[in-house]
Amino acid sequence: MTNEELAKAREELRAICDVALLSSMHHVTYISGYEVPHAVGVGAVIVYAGAFSAFSVRDSAAWLGVSAGGAAQAKRESRLDGILTFDGFDSFKQADSTGTYLEALRGALANVGLGKSGTLGIEPNALPYGAYERIARDFPGVKLVDILPALERARLTKTAREIGLIRRAVQVGDVGHNTLAELCKTAGRNEFDMWGTITARMNEAAGHEIPVSGELVTGPRTTTVQYPGGPRSRVTEVGDAALMDISQRVDGYWSDVTNTHVIGREPNDHERKYARASQAAFDAAAENLRPGKKASEAWAAANAAYAKHGMEMPHYMGHQVGIVVNELPRVVPYDHTPIQAGMVFSLEPGAYEGPGGTFGARSEKTVLVTASGPEVLSQFKWGI
Image (cartoon, rainbow, N blue to C red; front, side, top):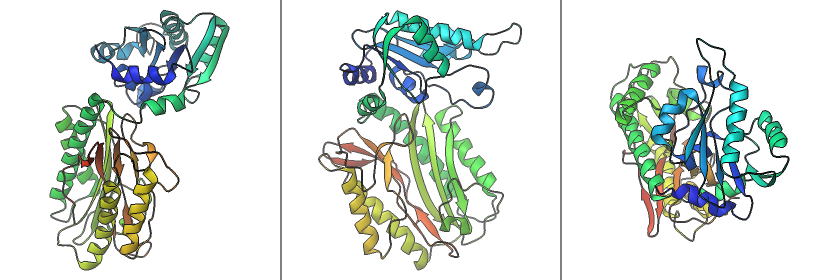
């Protein structure tokens, strides 16, 4: 089967290394198609390290390494040649999570053609120390090189497959924000209950439980950024602001979206002032997400929109999304990365009254860059 993401990685790595070893959750997901689970709870402690993948940069060989508990899912989802497994916990016999992981790693590297010499590309921030020792022992003449910058270049633009997966994550985000709009029609709800209803409906839309991170804040907590600021055990009152920033991972890909409402009544002019400033900054930044522009130009356009509303920009304007919820480039004044078709951004300008105030707003949607300009993927309506 065609694997465009693996082909893009190989293209970027061809001048750097002979074999690549990926050990971060997101890069293993990127080239394999296997949605590597988040390491939480028991899953974080019963294995020595997480999933990895090894592939040849010169030919088609590519292997995936997963824990025994993840093997069934990996077999359904992986687009690589083969799968090697390592131990997790076993209820009935002693498991060797460290030894089996390192042996699977050695086997994968051998299967993709790593010999006693050559160059092996690694992710220094994600490879366990034991792997370094094993590589030094079994492949003594191999030189290690950092391939993170090359992998980030490969991921700058999204393939058609990736854009389809991001669209799906965006749709689930729409469900979350449409649910928030419904819940904000009346006051008297606990933030915990609101969050539970919202995430339950998002899980239903995805067809299974999905990771959802972010915040739901109401009332005075919306006036400043204390991320993540909620939910908390707080019951809403008529006239409260409600701000929800959610990031959802669906089939390995993320979307990141935020909206603001006034609970139980129509917004007043004071509240509209802040909402309109953040929305104007969003529109200005989105308009500049065009091929040939730079990320810093989108930031400058948003900054100018704030000035027209008599406000100053409180934080950065956004970032790309994909297999990571916050990817490069970012919409900041010092990031001069050229915008290209196939990039996908979440733009998130905010406007906050500050300590002692009563209101704050943030307006974030996910935007695809096309050859003809920006396409706003998020379909939910602004709350104000």
